[in-house]
Length: 419
Ligand code: UD1
Image (cartoon, rainbow, N blue to C red; front, side, top):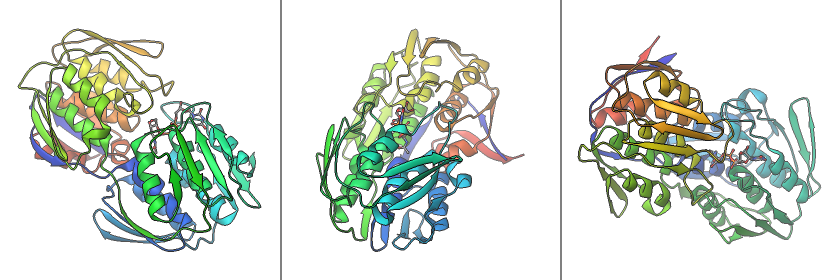
């Protein structure tokens, strides 16, 4: 098992290029099931979640070629095993995204129930209910979802709760359904728009992209495509916070600032100078200590839950008191006890973290528990005095491409070591 060892206290300076978005790449890779030919995906990040997705597609009969570090050729057009096995699904909840495309293309599918995870119970009831409304018959037994249909039929769907992957699953089911599907109260995350744009390039007829109401006119078939995924706004934001927490100044290239308003506004509020130029975002703290800020997570375009843990680390060393309220996942606080071990003054009250900023954190041995919680520990380690050792780095590798290389290029003292 790998660990990260960080000697903190060094302000980050320099420039990096962001990776392609994980949360765009995953649904688009699953959308390859819908095409009657191969797809080529450019700007894909090198992450373990991408390898898991490829392994899952391969286990069902797909082929892929790694054309370059960030370019994938995937042919999922002729699957011969319509089962998504527990052993792969359990490592990545987004595997549930095979369900919609498999039903649409093959009329049946058996997918392991993903189960809970460190940040909450995360049920898939809304995926299943909406698929039933599209004329799928669903049965859950022995830990598997058995789904079949004698033909999906467009319908008027209303999500009682805004959900990202369920919106994506239903879009992917509806593109090959008979007639028109309307998704009301759809999630508006930019990664969903990326999926829709890719599907339209494959021949789908989706309108209302990026809005609360998405309309899909079913088509007979979709063809292969070459598509470049959008940049990863969460990765970019995490590096901007890394610069802010260390009092440094960095530029992140290959960014789309248009989809990062809520995070960029909070960075200005903490006292950072933000400069936007075409596709790059620069942050300069000018050595200042950040000011504490209050945050409430929400669905896009509100503040993303995927940045909650990183901003908690930032607030931990900021000047003043603050509160961060988590409104999306009920248990996304696994980083709190670890940050406290590094000297943070944090108290959890219900779904709100109350924070009294301390002047500095101290290095400690800490444990990564999920992807974004792990990122917050890296940020805390970069700001802390002394040595921080982070265990279970595999959580980080799910969502951050070569994190220690990128941080090292910005001047961080960070090493990956094996036990
Ligand atoms: C996606 C993102 C994840 C992000 C999250 C919220 C991907 C691969 N993952 O996860 O990074 O943190 O959106 O922005 O894109 N819910 C139900 N029933 C359902 C589905 C969801 O109750 O059937 C609940 C969830 O438990 C959660 C809330 O709805 O409390 C939102 O979850 P959802 O948007 O579905 O998250 P994911 O799509 O799993």
